[in-house]
Length: 265
Ligand code: 5RP
Image 1 (tube, rainbow, N blue to C red):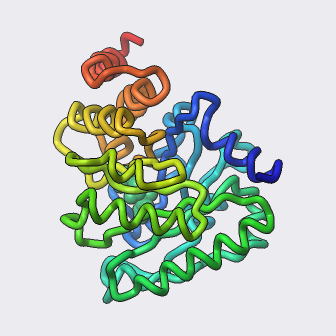
Image 2: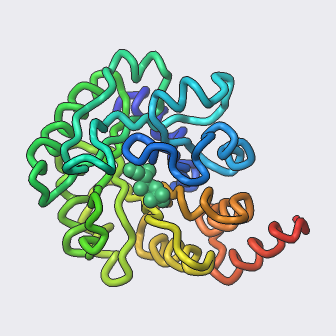
């Protein structure tokens, strides 16, 4: 592996081999998502606890201080919206020149395996990998399910992750599933990070799945709504960080969450 690629990956994946990525890219197809109306304000108290920030160029340029000392994972796919016909019909939206100009440490794009646009999104991934590898920029593939959240089974996610890795993704982001998640990770030759999905009812639920996914081989998370849409986002990110980097159990994470929430630490 070339020095530049290694260097960028080492900025994202920490020395312990783990990672906490904070995504705020949801507006690229959802518009002003709840609690992300002013992304710059949302991330201010959270950034210090994240290993990298995932976002589009528009939010990066307009809402994030250019002096920020945090690696950026630039989302470079889009072209669809929640009110449009099909979320899977994405294109690559950002040139390699722009990726370099914005000093991105990595890029990310969605693949929609099994959808009408499977071929398009997978060949988009292969082309993006070709273009970015020339400059030592890692591609993180996002295994997207559009509105069909019920697709999140181990069999399907394993298929998506393996295909994304085979096409050259250096990291794959996928969903956690309760049954057989180890098969998803074991079948994927590159590091896997877990998305959070829609906000769930209790923090403990999030801590449990992050912990379980880590035990089963994920290197960390790319987790947004279950941090910044919660009532206590700083407590949430600190507890999740403790699971990822300090091997906290869900119960220990819950206790840290309560302490931070109460202003005790
Ligand atoms: C949106 C994304 C998000 O980055 C990803 O889904 C993670 O965020 P969340 O934890 O809110 O699901 O790719 O398209």
